[in-house]
Amino acid sequence: MRKLTMLIISLILVSGAHAAKDKNRPQWVDNPASEYNDMMYMSTVGAGDSRSEAEDNARANLAKIFSTTISAETTTEQRYQEIIAGKSLSFTSQTDQTDKLKVSSNQNLINIQIGKTWTDKLGQVYALAYLHRASTAALYEEMILENSRRILALLSRSQESGDIWSRYASLSAAGVIDQKNGELLEQLRIISLDAATSLDLLYNRDALRKQILDTGKGITLQIFMEGDTDNKVLPSIESAINSLGFALAPNAENTIRCNVSFEDLDMQSNQKYIRYQFNLAVMDAQDQQILSFNDSGREAHFTAEEAKARAIRTLQSKITGDFTRQFQAFLDSKISAQ
Image 1 (cartoon, rainbow, N blue to C red):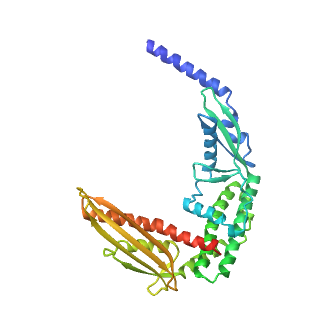
Image 2: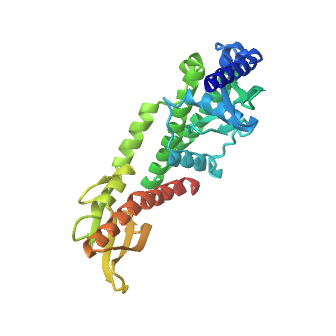
Image 3: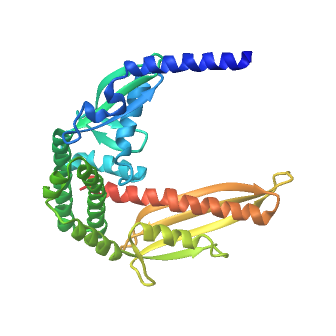
């Protein structure tokens, strides 16, 4: 009976504290639209143990509105930033001072503001994040048009270049910026559908993608491979080349010459060790080396067969990852060299 009485008293106290908390609770905590009209603003509420945590959570909640339609890759975003930072492009961003915030949902959102904050009796902090639709849409439009002007400049360069590698490099860079424009357009459609619908990009996205595809396929390469007796490494090289947009042909003027070797190591251990050595050189139509990639390492296992299998898997990962990025960096360097 005593335990039941104590339970009832506890429930009454908790209920009373909850009622007191709700009495002073601002309406915007549960309905942010009561503070910022949905027609003019986008707004969300975040909560946390501190003001900074609540503000970060509010920004993240606002970004989640976009997360179902946008999923930018880190490598693409990095290439975009590197390309637009190129001094030779002769463009200066007009939005560098904009309040850009990277939030946890992997969205780069612009013009987010923090409005009111409130702390309840339990110490929980609430923050209200919002962005003004019209002014934010104007910022997006300027960014998209600025990117469009960069794309037009790169298209002009591609037409003027007599070098097939430089031509494709300019088009590839234009494609990266176009991907960013696509991301910004999707965000703009959520912020203001009218603004996104009426915006003139200054170029045709489908035509650009086709031009990139056709030019890339016009660059053909032939692979000469040595030492790959199990035919485990060659497919990774072919996959890397195809991912870059190029084509493979038996009589191509551009060539890739590579060799791989595997060596048993005596490490005086219960495990078996295998060392691998890989060398690759890309040669242009004039038989001049334009790119080299070298890698070596060792792997171990209780059997020599599995140690070699591990070495092959490591090398495959390096080819599809590091080699691809190095080739892409070579292409991007052709832009700044112009």
